[in-house]
Length: 319
Image 1 (cartoon, rainbow, N blue to C red):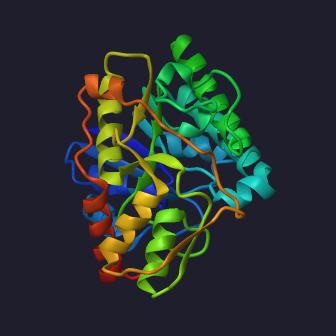
Image 2: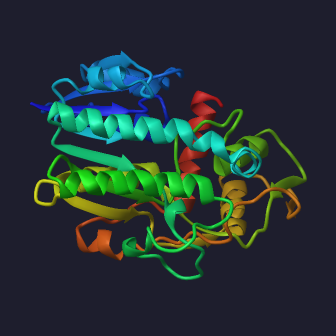
Image 3: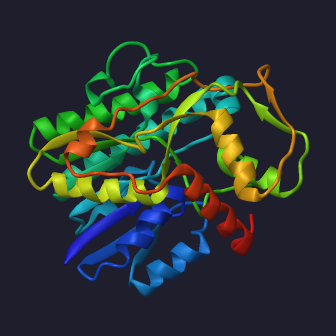
């Protein structure tokens, strides 16, 4: 029986990973929660799969030591996150708590004899760019504004993990996903762009005001594809001590196309206004997934299909 810990089990990515791993009879799953309850669908799946739930503050070392007991593999999905305005106005909210939690978990995992540690990093580690970014560029140059604080925090965690791997204390993987979307995302206070826009379109907002430029470029990856990528990375650590991998869709899209796809999925046609005076993030974040594809990864969900399913999920489950 493979004993797996998922941190951030009540978060969007963590909860979808719980739903996938709970289906496997050869996995004994431990789910670390903090303040938020798990989404109902993920909670049902976890309970059906016999998962163990632990409520812990992972900024406390002794609590990290407790959750690591008997664990073989860690998927570290917990993080303090927010949107563009918080990153601009209060960037340090991303730093201290995440640095402490990341360092505590790696130290506790190594001390407990954990074999594999998969860290959910971010494409915010990349320097300012106008072309596709291969993994080797993640620790080079100056992080794009306004990601400088969160990007350097993620870089620090990756460097910690690489050092643990070099010293033979952990097998470590850093996964840098594209912009993740899919069913189950928070569409309330603090919501990211896609769920926030879906809610506003569904509620009939017209005109629809979108913050920032319509030309901002991103790679949007469906959460199911990211979960498949995380499973692939876990398997890669059977034969590798350290790996960094971009997991995304392989298609770069402008915000304008995403907004068009959302209004289409909702079956509505509001007037769209782009307010470039509002806070926005980097003009481009474009991960290169060539390495992931060479190792067997392939994104299966097209953006338009994924958004259609996301809208249907909200209509069935509410916002």
